[in-house]
Image 1: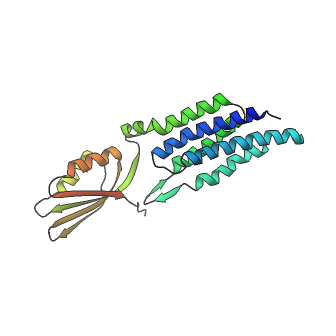
Image 2: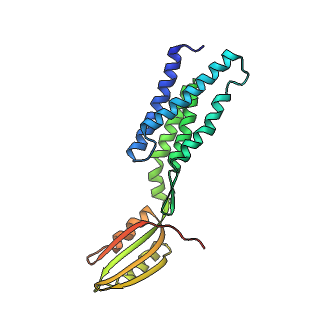
Image 3: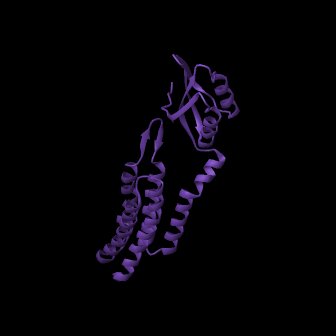
Length: 220
């Protein structure tokens, strides 16, 4: 039987790493924050400890039988944070984080303190440091709907075409609607955050307002 102090150290180490990862989720206003992350890590660590101890008491030759089911069970929790939101699937990163938190908890519960710690650092690096890299490389894109309202004296349609041609972005579903005091231009485009900012900056001016929201891509 493991000494109580050893069990406590393992659970506290799992809780500490889970809390660190959860703080990042809280800061970015994502689901599965600090409390959830701590519970996932502590639960996985406790299952690992208990499975080994029960195997010792019963003479079971497969001490990892209970712990192996963590991998299956954690999938249900992760699936609960994956949602479809107006043309995009959100929550995949949080679901993957929950999955790896369980693995970190198992490592801590098994006494692999360094492995758990290094894994926690790598996860935080992926969650924090990779965002500027994605933005720099423009590899994270989203299908957006643009709505441009122009006053009667402003002809903004040529500028819209020119701006998006310069960004090498294809405009889809372009609709121009005449109104009493001007015109409304709506269209969809698959753009990165950097391209969104450049387009809005180039098109917004006196007499022209631009709006943007996630759009549901239509497939034939």
